[in-house]
Image (cartoon, rainbow, N blue to C red):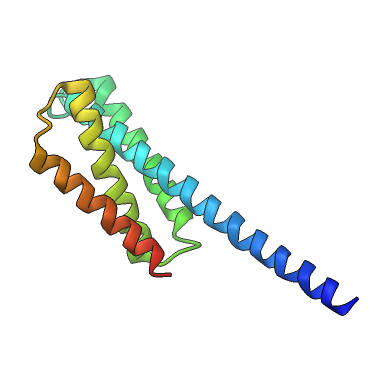
Length: 126
């Protein structure tokens, strides 16, 4: 009976850890997405000269910062910040290529892959 109880306790601890990891990942991805879409509206605001795109920029950035703050409850500052910024850079690259027809050279793709590898190594170090 003790071994069954110990197994159940281990599974419950693992579930909590998995839940926390899933919550962290979701929050960081959402924060990066809000920051990236905010960056798109920065471009559309033409130097903060258009009212609605400028308003949307600030709303998206505040929301992204709030989500990043929530993610920092579960993880170190450096890890959270770098993961959000790294994901934001990757998403900005993808949106730039897909939405604004920006260049997609092999050197840029290599840079994006290096950023992705950095994010993976940050997360796997813990």
